[in-house]
Amino acid sequence: MLFNKKYNVTIKNRNITLEAKSGTNLYKLLKENNIPVSSLCDGNGQCGKCKVRISSPGGGEINKPTKKDRLILALMNLENGYRLACEYIIRSDIIVDTEEWNVSSGKDPDILGVKKKNKETAEEEQKPAGVTEEKEYSTSEEDYESEESSESQSQSEPHTDYEPDIAEDEEKTSSVEEDEDQTYGVRDGLLLIQYPGGVKYYVYAAGINNIASEGLVKINEPLTDIIDNNILSDFIHDNIDIPDLDRVIIILDKEYFNGEIFFKLINYHSFEIGTLKCEVLQPYSYPKNLLTFLRLLNSVNGQNLQVALDNLRFSYFLKDGIFYFLNSAYVSDTINIDRLLTTGKNPVIDVADDLTHVTMKDDLKEPDSIALPALLKTIKILMRIGAVDNNFVLKDRNELVDELKLEHLVKFSKRNEGNMFYIYRKKDVEIFLSQQMLDQLRELKIYLMTLTDFVQKELGNIDNIIIQNLTHYDYLVNNLFDLSILPKYYSKKTKFYSGDPTILASKFFTEQDVKTFIESRISDLREIELYKNEEFNKRYDKIERKLTS
Image 1 (tube, one colour):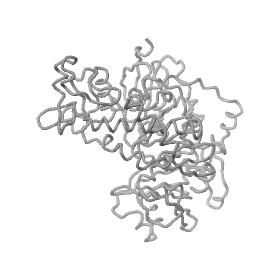
Image 2 (cartoon, rainbow, N blue to C red):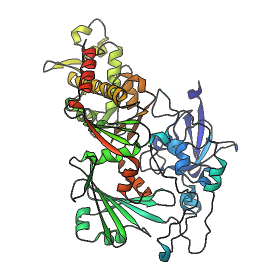
Image 3 (cartoon, rainbow, N blue to C red):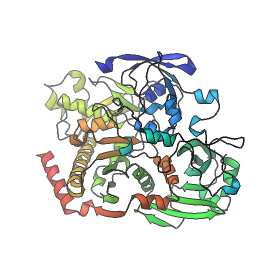
Image 4 (cartoon, one colour):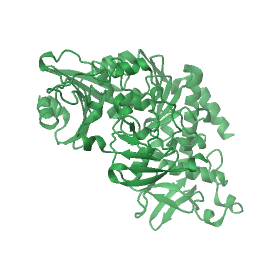
């Protein structure tokens, strides 16, 4: 079998060799073996920081660049063997250098060849080497689409071979004359994000259309006070090394300034400090609305349905520049998904196929919760052995006496007239699956099946379903399909993104301001209150009756 074959991955700068199965993701291999690799998005292909240099031990070919590689990395990097670790699928012996650019020159090859702006001609736009005027950094699903394994969202099949267009390459290889006044990395954008106990910052470099550096300034004074006291310029000068600053985008965790409301999600406020343009993004009405708005930056291309597991009250569908705001208040409230998503410091992250033992995040400590993928896997196993039926009903132990082994039967119990199955039970620690949790998953299934059916039939064909969540869960999407919580028809069209999406705000620097960016991509807003929509409710009732019959 292809995926049983193993290859050697030699880490050149650490003089160690790892063994990896064919189809293993390089970024995950490095992280699992505690080999440092930069990333701002935890390997989700959104930041471009995890570039490494790859070569073949025998001088052979390495993987062709993927679409993300070509979109983010400069041509000279690609030609010299640089790839994004999160995009590289191991299918041969390779040599990896995770620090070569740092050791050899102290400068990032992504930002070489960018000429310093003369202060007297700062208003004149200069075209950086290797970047075309129309090219823009994008994390859209359409741009990033690749061949994926139907069995695992975490491992990808080999990407399509790279066949560059000659004319495009000639344009990209245009050079910029270097001289003594040349500097590396003309940075013209700064992203400031309010964090507890400090301000997170990302420096945006125009030369690479990407984040060039990041950090955290520990300070008790909130950004709102810094702005109100007119010391924003001083704060930036004292704490962040960034020459030639043109714009600042500030992200707040709650509403503070009066401004323009976009899509009932954000409050947009702008002001100027001399020639410095400052823009403020604030959540409108509800804190999670800001995260939802930033996640929409992944959905401006194609007809994509976006569902945030951590904010089911609102889903979104974009078609031909029309932004459909799908308000599912009251419908989604019965699901109480927050309980299923919430985990403690040491959750159960996996269960054995025979349910005899579990794996915790830290095996040296007692578990305090269960991660959603482990919970879904438990349900799948219980369905297989007949302890949970297709309607998500956990059977009573008395019904299973003649069907299950003793090691399974002892895990069944009843509390407050509700059936339970103990996933882990020791001393004072109880991790269990209850009928109430199964009821919530059943409601989630009805909602998602109704939502996809309604959008497909009433609004337009769904190119992709994008599932979002702040917490990363391996195999989550696979489990949702295995339990038919998501319609299996969309198994190859569904993507999962996790992590804090605030870094996506760097995309706003590709336009003159946030408002222009939005208006150039979304032409109209149409809200549909699903709980009042007759067609949606008809479909909901039909699916609910079908599941209970």
